[in-house]
Length: 226
Ligand code: GTP
Ligand code: MG
Image (cartoon, helix red, strand yellow):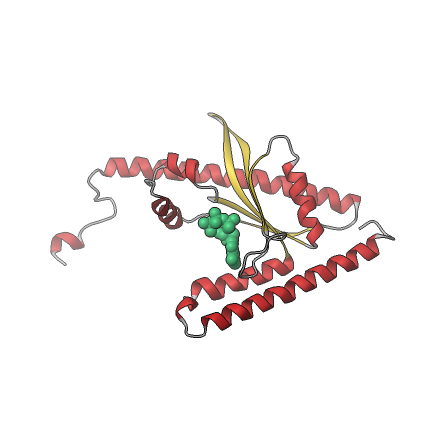
């Protein structure tokens, strides 16, 4: 490296002022997505709270939220063939704001999904039911892309949030499968087909347990409100 190159900093772009303005715009947008997450999270917590008073049980085990990392946002836009701009992020990406809801039982997933979809400030843009139609690798979850209005000083902005609703079992499997499949690059291993088959078998074991727990709940539910 020449002396000149080692002195380069990340502000040494052709137009540092433009870079600073864009970075500020990006930060502003991420703040808006964080607020959208808070709105959705509050709605879920309200429902869970109401349930615990009405039925003495919580349909939601826990909620996890995340904002997509700048690098992943950049890569996804690139893959779709769009420039990295605030406008394109809002127009073409549905999963910058993510909320994962982990429920106790399978029927809780549909209860939560229907109650959220039924709220009149929420617009459901897309649903993918990977529980009724699991992916070929065994992945199950109920996915919704919703749009929610967030009130800022400059006015109301509709923001998109990706909701993934699943049982503890589905979450347990998906989290481990994600770690195994994505982090280790196992696609290149010689025994990859066998590994995929094993992952599918483990998913089926979780499906059976989820269904069994649901049947037990239904049985008890015939005699008690649960
Ligand atoms: P992405 O481009 O992956 O964001 O998704 P998509 O537009 O095809 O949407 P989809 O609803 O299918 O998946 C969205 C998210 O669900 C992913 O980003 C993962 O978090 C999760 N997901 C989907 N498929 C799998 C899977 O096979 N395994 C695991 N562990 N997670 C998955
Ligand atoms: Mg995604």
